[in-house]
Amino acid sequence: MEKSILVMVLVLAVLPYQLQSYYTPYNRLSIDCGATNTWEDPLTNYWWRLDDEFIKSGQNILLSVTTNRLPLETLRYFPEGTKNCYNLPLEVQEKYLIRAGFYYGNYDNLSKPPTFNLEFDGNLWATVTTSLGTDPIYHEVIYITRKEYVSICITKTQQGQIPFISSLEAISIAIYDGVYRLMNNDTALYLERRTNYGANQTFPERFDTLAEYYNRFWKPEQLPNYQNPFNGIDSDFSSMAENSPPYKVLNSAIRAQNVSDSIFLPIDFHEKAPLSAYFVFYFYHVGPWPNLNNITKQIVYIDGIEKNATTVRPYEECVVVSVYPVNVTGTANVTISPAQGTTLPPTLNAMEVFTTIEVSSSKSDPRLSFCAFFYVLVCLSGVVVWFG
Ligand SMILES: *[C@@H]1O[C@H](CO)[C@@H](O)[C@H](O)[C@H]1NC(C)=O
Ligand SMILES: *[C@@H]1O[C@H](CO)[C@@H](O)[C@H](O)[C@H]1NC(C)=O
Ligand SMILES: *[C@@H]1O[C@H](CO)[C@@H](O)[C@H](O)[C@H]1NC(C)=O
Ligand SMILES: *[C@@H]1O[C@H](CO)[C@@H](O)[C@H](O)[C@H]1NC(C)=O
Ligand SMILES: *[C@@H]1O[C@H](CO)[C@@H](O)[C@H](O)[C@H]1NC(C)=O
Ligand SMILES: *[C@@H]1O[C@H](CO)[C@@H](O)[C@H](O)[C@H]1NC(C)=O
Ligand SMILES: *[C@@H]1O[C@H](CO)[C@@H](O)[C@H](O)[C@H]1NC(C)=O
Ligand SMILES: *[C@@H]1O[C@H](CO)[C@@H](O)[C@H](O)[C@H]1NC(C)=O
Image 1 (cartoon, rainbow, N blue to C red):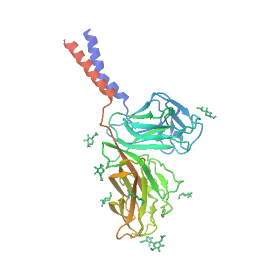
Image 2: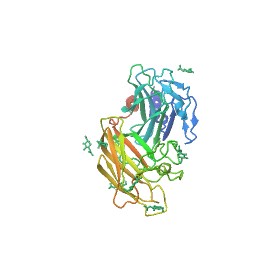
Image 3: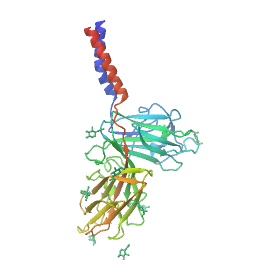
Image 4: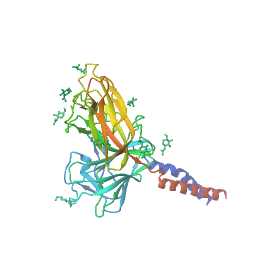
């Protein structure tokens, strides 16, 4: 009798280690939702994993259309239940970039692209409005993880509309300190736009891991009212400047036509309500290179308020200007104006715009705390019986 209790106490003593061994956090996770084969991404050399180890509900399907983005050719859809969740084992208290991809591809032959909600750890991330178009929809958030598992939920909001998901990626961006350094840990950053100015539409959005550590997509955009200079140096590396922008992105820009002109960019936000925004501007000299007197001095205004004055010189590292918080409502006007002593017109190479999502106060994983509670209870009773 007493021996069996001893065995029980010993078993319970090692149980937490057993539980722990199931939690294997990923620094980088690429999930091809609905897929039945894992495959190696030829661009990044990372493997796309199947989703069935992260979710137990839903059904998978292979689209009858092909895309040039392989993870989007399968999806998982959720005919049952209001809320269906993926549980991603990630490092705790670490900054991650998390991106979900949606490509309807008329998989159900109903030509009715659904609308539904996306949540992370119980926080509303986005309302996903899918379409019959050929462009996939991505929603991205930068989030400091709270606990061992991050839950990503797809929630039905419209009667008769069946939510789905095509891809889910999470990558730790804590390689260096100070990535998106102004971010608070009680907020997450929702990506509004990430633009690679001056690059033409055929330029890729996505780069290999050497050029882009953080798996970001940079949307190319040329603006006809400005010069669109391009260095033509196809560097395979990323800059050492704040947030490690790829040189592939820094090598092109928009530049005002004249040294006395400004760049004016109205930025639309995903909703009209007041929001708190985080802007990052990337400034880098785009040729011609040889003359050291070619310097750009410029001032950044947002809605007419001066936010930064900066000088950009040839042969120097990219200048990164982060501005947070900025109160915005519907639209924000970014103006980059020439400053005294500039010899070149205002120039902008890349820009990221985020809005903040308030994160509900941290809760520990209810399953783990239940286990801990149960464990303490049983151990105590074991000890009482043993000595009693
Ligand atoms: C949709 O139509 C295609 C082509 O007719 C067919 O191969 C596929 O099985 C259909 N899918 C569903 C879910 O009905
Ligand atoms: C936020 O960061 C501070 C300073 O690093 C830390 O003390 C605090 O515990 C963090 N809070 C949460 C909710 O993670
Ligand atoms: C886009 O830019 C690349 C690189 O400069 C160039 O090779 C290509 O011809 C351009 N395409 C168009 C449509 O302008
Ligand atoms: C630049 O400014 C000069 C002087 O104001 C003007 O003559 C010229 O037309 C302008 N060029 C362009 C491309 O706007
Ligand atoms: C910039 O450098 C180029 C190449 O050396 C030179 O031709 C040009 O005059 C310089 N422009 C200014 C404004 O210094
Ligand atoms: C932004 O610029 C537009 C066009 O010039 C103007 O109508 C609008 O009032 C400006 N918005 C803000 C917030 O300054
Ligand atoms: C502008 O941004 C740069 C780069 O972050 C910073 O070093 C500088 O202090 C800022 N200047 C002003 C006036 O805010
Ligand atoms: C932004 O709005 C908040 C709340 O409305 C206010 O407390 C804060 O002072 C504003 N911040 C700035 C920089 O205007």
